[in-house]
Length: 101
Image 1: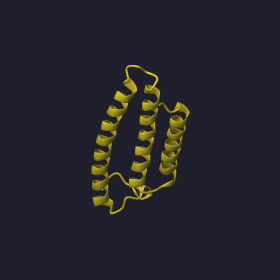
Image 2: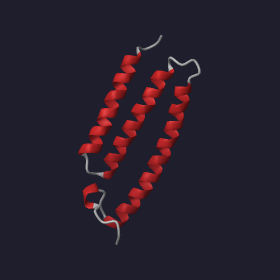
Image 3: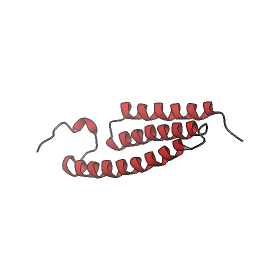
Image 4: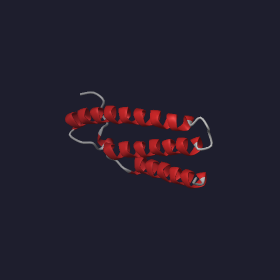
C-alpha cells in the first residue's frame, strides 16, 4: 500500500509555511528555533516522499543526515541562547540590539 505523494507534499508545504509564519511573527528566540525545526522537518518529509520513487532510497538517507544536523543545530542554538539570556536577561529578539558590553 502506497500513499499518493501529493498528500506528503501538501503536508510538507503546510509544515514549511507554519515554520515560516512562526519565524516571521514571533519575537521570542525559542519560538524562532521551533520555526526553523518545522522548516527542517518539512524538508525531511520532502526527502522521504521523493525517495519512495527511488529504488536506492537515498532520500531516506538524506533525511536521517538532516535529522542529525538538526539535532546539532538545536544543541548549539540553545547553548548560544542560554549565554544570551545570561547576559541580556531576555530572549526577545528585538531587545538584542547591542553586540558589545
